[in-house]
Length: 260
Image (cartoon, rainbow, N blue to C red):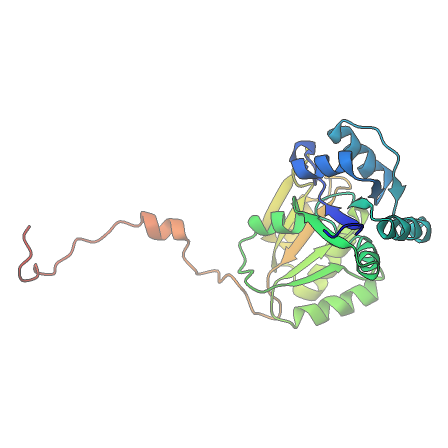
């Protein structure tokens, strides 16, 4: 970091369990000149975890213009600013991207505190081949537009990762069933690392039936590849079956020079 150069730190939050917040995130919250949070709830939880009480800025659709102006001024003055989204690693389907653009414009140093991420956490529990996948993020709200977009994503032939607000889960699953089919395989992770954490690996129909009474909770949905391009064939033997399969005794004669 050059003398007099500002710094923007994109710091990770927890995604449910408060103890999962990175230690480095707590450190920068205590030492930075300016704190910016996506929302009050996430901000208060982070400050509580850090054991401090400080003023901060909000950065959402209501406070963006003023917060960006204050950030620019702070970076020009060589100060250090920290941004944290409501949950997880910033930049994934949250408004923090514009803060990075401001930091680049002001020639500030950009640092990252990596940490929990709901997408990568869901991938860890997903059985599909995810060497290549498409992150669709938030699908369109309107049903017709959503289903048209899902059809386009299905044609890509790779697994599809989606997020949305908790109250749209049922509607999203209904649209996915219509476009991909009732028996299409998917992974749904709900309230990761929270008290109501549940992970479903099943058909879209079974997943929707199993989530009717779970309430409104954060989720990530990963659908297997569309248009028949399944990334995990139903007949593919599992590694466990291969390892545990009894070995047949060899009938080959011993090689020359080999002693029993």
